[in-house]
Image (cartoon, rainbow, N blue to C red; front, side, top):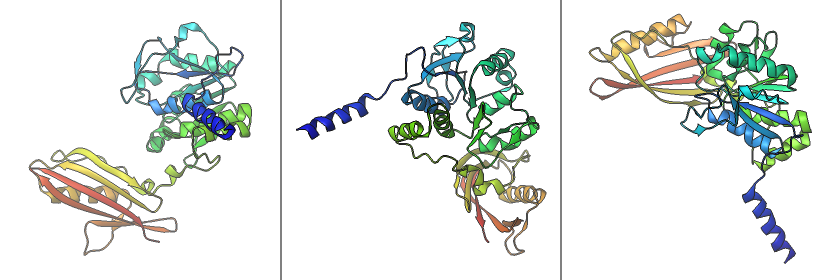
Length: 323
């Protein structure tokens, strides 16, 4: 009978869950929100912080309702005008733009918070928002993989870490893309309450956490692919249909509208792109394959094109490590 009661209580606890603290003396995290914020960037860490017993407050410039990148509507608890100081600040990424990054009120709020807070952490391309305050100058930072190049160009004084899911500079932390914010939040819990507490939270949310496990996304095979650009006027990129792979292989699918031109024009454009990126024709017999030596590895890229309907064609790029 005791076992049955214990099992019931455990089940009830799982359903009920744990709420974040309302104790004014609890470690207090301020979560910056803005229009177009990526939900997973702040919701994931909020779950971690709440399970750790931290106090949580969402805050935005005006306090008005925001719509996340995926359409979720969220009303911040307060605006900058409340002048609340936090023990830690979370800066998510999302649909950031020049207006947001260069907003002096946002920059000044982050700078003011950083003077009082124990920690400031960015998630995903929220690193751009943090870097624009110049607080990251001379420090290590990471961001979402697809933004590596633009981040390095915009912030040359920041040391970009492309092989880490988390950079910890003491007070200032940055994480890679999307779910990496959960790893960052767990690491922050470890800094505040110890590793045992962080591992307990990871178990509660059923998250397979590997501290210092590296950033596998930055090691994926698509890091070898050139950045395609400058499509001829006769060809329009209709959509990207798939994008996946691992460290040894990568697959990309595209839908092109060739309008009044021939499919050969697509190969001519791609061949020029590959040549400009330092790739060479794999063989004279196969004009749709290119190879490149990168370190000790030899890579082979092959393109296949299929006609779909009218002027629409699908193209698949297959990248494989040969050695």
